[in-house]
Length: 241
View 1: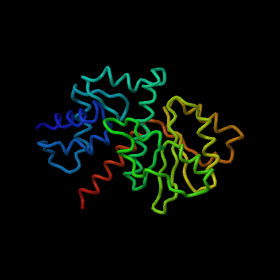
View 2 (view 1 turned 180 degrees about the vertical axis):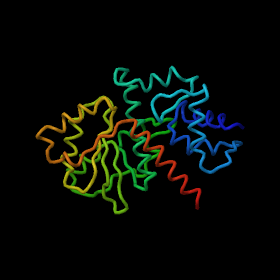
View 3 (view 1 turned 135 degrees about the vertical axis):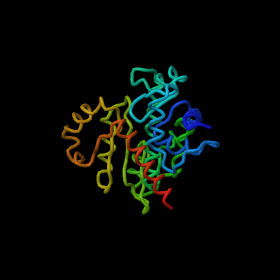
């Protein structure tokens, strides 16, 4: 099997599209494919860039040309249907959870999201915790368990909280972070880069003065890039063992 055929098959298995990080992890494992190296990252990037069977949705996210109409509709943005907006939300929620897994954290998503789609899987397939650790008082836990993604450290305390804001109000997510500000943790708003100005305007409000140094904005392209880099780093480390 040719290498570009392995990439094509890996993308099909993922639902017709894939991040570079997902392709790094799956394409070399397609039966019958031969790569000649345990770290074929540059080869995979070159394949999706040079073969017309693939097209770029955005940096770090590629799809099959044969699935273009369906895939573009899924990731078209906030002006699409409610179902399609939700699909994009769950996709980036899943990416953040996978990054946490790759970095050695335990990961949690809210109970109402566990059966939501993430490519060809469900979010529950990629998170490591089915229940939130009881790290604080019940009233604070009730707020924490609604946050889109939580990374927990080895001591079972939250390392990072993430809220994915595909089309919903950033203000409400920041209010959750205010309730959790007394913990030594990181807070992230994950959204399209076009919403960064909105994020900065919200953070300028007096209501959020206490958390201003603690909250960062991750745009989607940064999440995709980080996912690819962390996946590549993990695979390269494994290749040395």
